[in-house]
Amino acid sequence: MDNENKALSSAYDQTCSEILPARYDPAAVETWLEDMAKDGWQLTGFDYRFFRTAGTFERSEPRPTRYRLTPLTRKEKEPDPEQRELCELRGWRYAAAISDSFHVWRCDDPGAPEMDTDPVTQAEGYRWLRRRVWRSYLIDLLLVALLFVIVLALPGNGRGFLLNMSENDAPGEFTLWCLSIVGMTASGVGTIRTLRRLYRRLHTGVPMDRPAPYRARQWRTRVLWL
Image 1 (cartoon, rainbow, N blue to C red):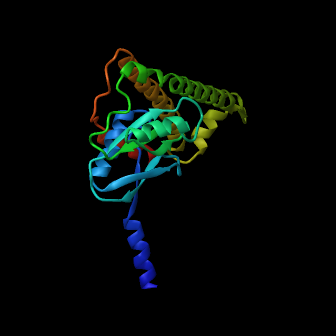
Image 2: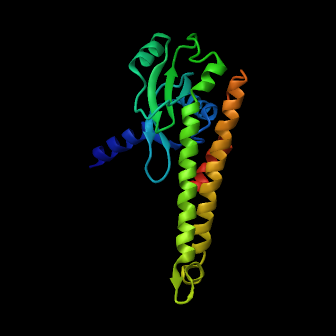
Image 3: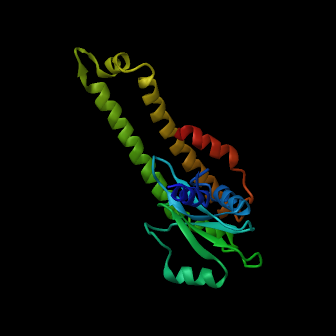
């Protein structure tokens, strides 16, 4: 039993999971992944349990590794085989995908050329992603509006159902429910603004700033998730 526990502990020490700092900020995610590689952790995939997105890593030798994110142009689980082969010839290997948003590539060769050298061409890759995020955000807003209409319209012993719920629920439950809706709406607005600024920047020929700050945003994401 002791040997089994030691084996499990050793396996656990060789893997870790870290919450994604910013799902729709590619420069921040790339910097985060590169810092993890410098600390001896290489990306193996992403975990979507418990209402959060986290990167899963395995222990490796600490080394400088470049990571780059490319937006999904459609609903796909893996990149096009021709694109994958072309990237591998240039020194970039496919690592994982962030569901419905980005493909993740890695390169261990410091002399390999960048994946994207033209910001304007790179900006075109974000068109479909922007449309998909907009659609998702509008659907969420419609669902929230429908929920409020239903809650306000339902009778509750001659009084508003919303008022009854605020009085009968556990202390703070109604407030927490409202704050969750506000938080979801604010998160959607923030995501759209981030993608909009990124698209405009690239479309004018200005490349992304790398490295990008991410630690404060990662802590904020952890707190909101908890």
